[in-house]
Length: 630
Image (cartoon, rainbow, N blue to C red; front, side, top):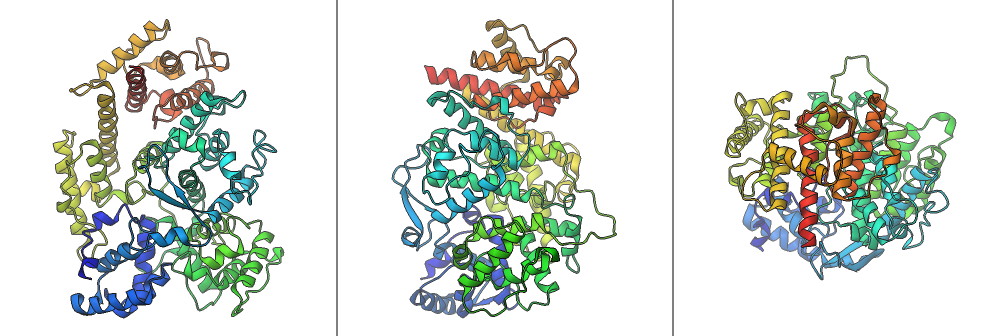
């Protein structure tokens, strides 16, 4: 019916589809569209391409409706609205019930305190097996885990959930994804009880947040109880971050070979990682002279033929990977041969033959990304590459934004902010309702008017920043569009600071904004009351550098939590000793519940802006604890 077309704007679609999913939809749409329009009769083909099966009777209804309402043609916007309505995978799709009854999917009653009572979630046995397989391979040599936690029995339905129960394995996985995030001295490893397991899982969640995971609906208790949908959701976010870490020009200069005509390297890097991997896959299919291409990690790889060609193309000859099997009629048999070849390359990870044939997009994405990380098979080019290496400050802001759940996921700080949409989402988190979304232009933009539409958004960003009383003197919308680093970083810091202070204000119950000097006064008062001898004069105080004031403050908030015997002490500490103290301080802060985004280096170098966020987050935890005791 015509209501199919009444799913409002793209704003409503953003929570449903990630940027990578939108890229997949766009690719599938473009494959069958003429110009920018798709014939109603081809709608079913595109749905199938995206891994969705719509019943024939429903397709006939839609075709008639498209004829009547849209003269037989659908724009991409129309298509996404229909897709959202009919998808079994989109939130609230009309065929959502079908999810629970598909093979290999277990229905689970959601009992998480943070999820609505009585909601139902589905989780896939295949993902539990695939993730267990990956964890076994990357953590197999860890001395704390070997023999006790790994290898996880992949065929034990509870094996994975038991292994993550006390938080030790999850801390280790976060360190695989982003080395050095969790100071292992902060993990409770022995004499585990309900209390210190809860501490471990709090450390897990706040550390995951610090590397860019969105953990809004997950609590420590959910991980302890092994709520499948929440555990699998967190695991995938961590694994994805770790897999995509290598997908950069710095790690693989040969990526420049994937740049198409009339395209810059920056434009390539604007693509979601999933789309870059598809581009890489197709580059090798073309190089092999194969006639097919892939537009997704589901339907297009399900007969295993494209995999067969890819593996033969990227594997070094000495590994003895067999010739591609083109036109083999039994996809399960071919998928088995593909996995035998992957084993020769030590890349038989994530998928079993049935996951290839069934087109499990998540697991196949993991499989392909691992192949890329080990065998990119892209020769470096002679030309000078742009310096796109991320600074520590840029990475901190990017992780913070992603942990706030912005859409699309931010891969490249300046490239992904140039249309203003992510900044506006952050402003809305600082002050609900400050953004009038009807004034915002949304992608996809038409090529001719793209720059103008983005500039309008960026000008609006500056207007809203003024409403929030940010300092934007000398900043115009064009600076954001042109990716002026200094001005964009200034805007981001003010946003992070405003958000942190707003959270603190809520915790203290104050009706006025908290001032810097109030935070400093609270720090010193807390330290004095606890009999600690450290003090801070301001956020630039050079004594903060050795980490002692932060560590003392944490012990004042939660007495006895700090192991002082493992700290470096003395009048003059080396930079390495200071860094060790700061690493311990940051991890212990996260362990007692502080959502710290600052890095240990920020403490050692006394970066005043980030030091403020450390003390403000600790103050918020202390007030929350006090309120909880009342």
